[in-house]
Length: 186
Image 1 (cartoon, rainbow, N blue to C red):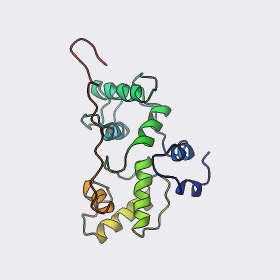
Image 2 (image 1 turned 180 degrees about the vertical axis):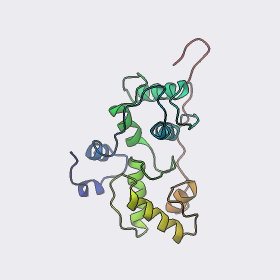
Image 3 (image 1 turned 120 degrees about the horizontal axis):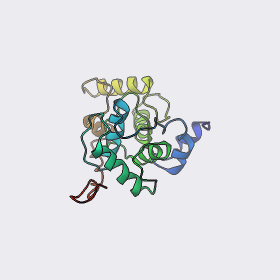
């Protein structure tokens, strides 16, 4: 079970303390296997893309997504089996940099935690728990309205840039050599 979230508020996003304090609630996702499909696979692909893997976000866990998952697992010293389980979800969601992916209702992770902190600085009174819930969505809409953005409740590149005071978004590291060569699948 999770500790009191007030202890987490002082932690910097992306720190091991944050990941440890909320991993059982925030950083989990369902176990995914190659050839699964749906919105959870699309979120997996968004997270992989935010970590620098160039792949299409289509919601299908095909061979390209499997290769990216295996490469990510190797980079994080996890069992490189291509199955996205507890440890892979935690690694993906606890190491994603704020601003590297578009956030929307239902997303979780340290980037959502950072978003909530930035919204609090902007005067929005929401819980900072790493879960993009209805309250976070309403705070995003209020922020977008205040700054004359399209009121979508989705944190895209424009909203991220405004939240960060005009500072550029993160540049995810480009992952190279992770897919395949003509002789061997990775």
